[in-house]
Length: 172
Image 1 (tube, helix red, strand yellow):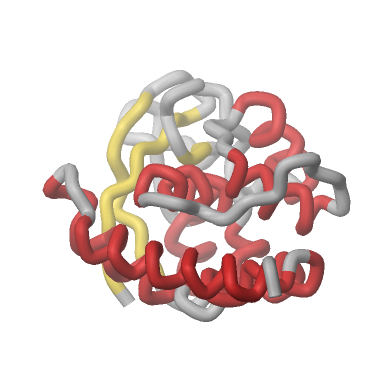
Image 2: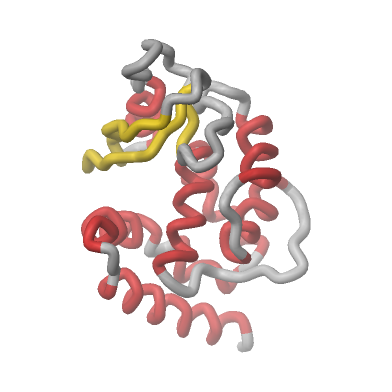
């Protein structure tokens, strides 16, 4: 388990960085639910802080999923995960090609941590996603390690390997 800083926004409008624990889903969710706003003391916080109106992690999953689809930072790969797990369709399914694509997927899964354990459902719908599903924990570790520097060469290299494997599966 690791502790990372996450940008969060409180219902009162205050945006701040909070320590979050990554690890088993129950631990991560408990960590997120324990966050208190330093301004108002409330615990209705949402991840991101960019929009200021993200629903709190205590909100129903469907509400958080709807908010992310309408207001979250999206890309083709994060929309692919969203579509597979929300039971929707996507016209351009994709996997994350680089650390920035991965970051958008991470933002989605940070907002809806219940979906992290369901990545196998993405693979069930899109078999070529398997090289990404099987390496997700390693992607998380490398992102946490490298992102503070503003560059993520190890993550990028691993994603390129996964992408090559995905393409072989996709166009078999």
